Amino acid sequence: MSASEVGAEDIAARLTALGLTPRVQRHAHHMSIEAEVPELLPADSWREALEAVAEADRFGLLANSLNGRTLWAAVRTETPATGEVRGSGRQR
Image 1: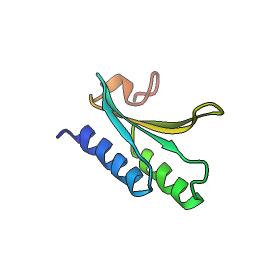
Image 2 (image 1 turned 90 degrees about the horizontal axis):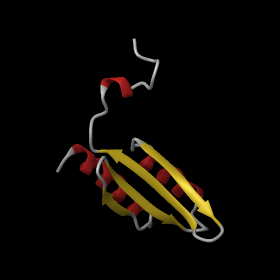
Image 3 (image 1 turned 45 degrees about the horizontal axis):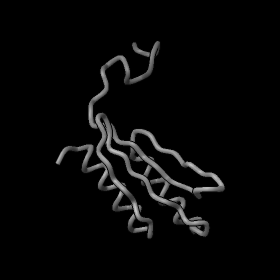
Image 4 (image 1 turned 120 degrees about the vertical axis):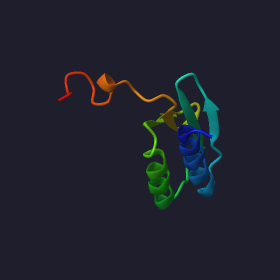
């Protein structure tokens, strides 16, 4: 199992421990983790969920009145090229 797969599975396991039901998918350049967030998730659980997804390369929350709230994270499966590590114009 690659490091990105281990990272994605770790995030999913942490979300599962909070009572969420994460979905993990492999894509061409990343692994994605998504979990629906119930309306009444306690503040401590929110904090732990955010700490879990903060381990990913990217994360966020999609929320709307039709579909509720989905917490998501993405873990790269490829190492970025040197020029992409700090963003454009920030290399030394």
